[in-house]
Length: 268
Image 1 (cartoon, rainbow, N blue to C red):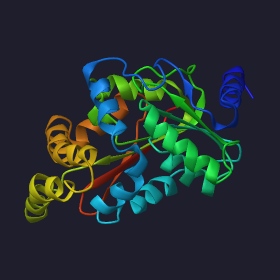
Image 2 (cartoon, rainbow, N blue to C red):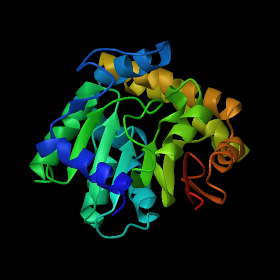
Image 3 (tube, helix red, strand yellow):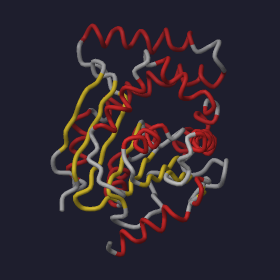
Image 4 (tube, rainbow, N blue to C red):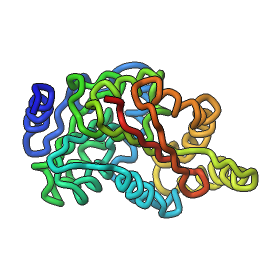
């Protein structure tokens, strides 16, 4: 293994026994620009119930989308994988269930990572999955460290999506895979109309009895997805990937385009 690979292995080993390491952000404290502070504050209020209500609010599609994302990975034995915006480590756990590689999960929100750590320990996977608190815009890893980089529901929470993709590509080895799962806006007119009604009316109302944190998410999510889709449509995001070393980008719309999976290989 080359020096970069050695450093990647040492990095994963250093976060021993699944404990959350804080790199670039203080444990449980907000950090960085307003976008990052907002993301931390938003998810701090829903961490403990995140997986349950993410499944309910997506009509029980959330886990299916995650499984499809992981199914597109071509992982070899002992690959080192970076899961960015790992949240409660759902994608990391899905990867660990299918492959024997090592996984580093990174997220900005300490409470989400704490919930993820509990799930990892319950499954006895704390020796294979390590969690790091940090920001996708400034990854605390050397160039070309990881064999695979995956990110989920990230780009709406960063100020510069293009620079963030550049940073994700930086830590990916040549020939490694970059994959993402993001929310999208349906293209068919009648489905888009139903989607907008659900996001503007139904979800804000149905989250009221859940908790204040989930009601806040219910009011925020639809406008956030719509605004980002207008600013950065799928074709533009694919172009960002190509501009940052991923020449051939494949895209799959799931559930009539409500979720979008993208993947590609970094040029050698």
